[in-house]
Amino acid sequence: MLTERHLEIFVAIAEEGHFGDAAQRVGISQPPLSQALRRLEAQLGVRLFDRERGVSLTDEGAALLPHARRALAALAELREGGARQSADGHRLRLGLPPELPPRLGAVVAASPVRAGLRTRLSVVTAPTATLLTDVSAGRLDLAVVRHPVVLHGLSAGPVTLLPTWLLVPDSGIGCGTGPRAGRPWPYAVRPRVEAPAAHDLFLDTLAGQGRRVETVVISDERAGLALVAAGQAMLVTADPALMADGVARLPATDPALPLRLRVVWDARRLAASHATGAAEVLAAALASAHTVGKEEQR
Image (cartoon, rainbow, N blue to C red; front, side, top):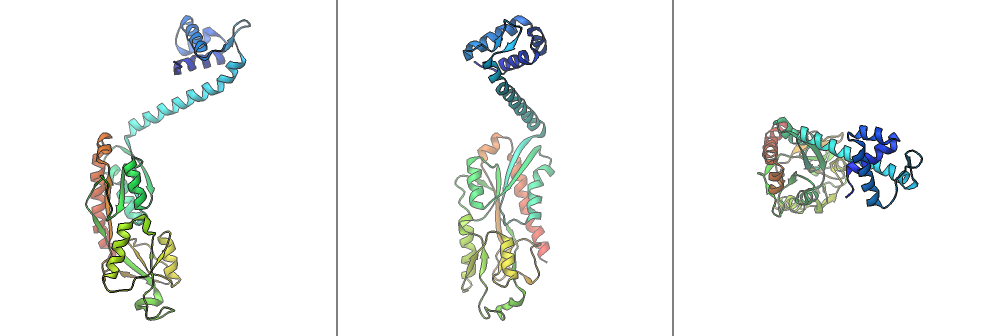
């Protein structure tokens, strides 16, 4: 079997050009070094060194040398990464939905580290449907997703309701002016495929008020804000910092349209990686975001 030790011995001989010096470099005597080289050559079926004129690489040895160096460098990097992970703690892979306000997202993401858990954090932002798939597949450890969702065997924390605001064109408050006078502006919404159940609940809540609901699909809230500023849409957002000239902000209370969120995870995978505590901390941090959001809405 070809081993890392075989490659170390081969590279040492090639670089030192002398069996005695190579043996000293790898910390063994010359006879075992020569034996290891013969085993390596037997496994590969080629001669790596010409021993008749000193110690020089054959054509096959010269071809192997750069590959052996890269393999040894890759193994060393892998070991170093493992050592760092052992020292720094478990790597926690977290997913956040784009609807979560950036400031609250930062608070939630940082909560395991601030709680004293030894973890290295990586964070991605993706739609709820993608986050659920990635948690189920083991590509993410935890995710904050929009509720309601079908969990498909995943564990989940309590549902947190974040208060929201309705952003409308400044000249269109009450829909009494502008090109759509007397008619409501369409709601700027993200594609239904990103969170089907949450999308349907949002529209059903509006329709339950006897309102005619029109929508325009946007890629993100910044695009929605641009449409509001242009007098072409309304936008419901949980982000207290999302604002622009020509936009008015109203509490989304008639009807209430809270952003429903919860933390989801695969309990078996988290238990195997000894990171179950991270789920509890994350869920608590998300729950506290409700209080922060209510204070900001005042």
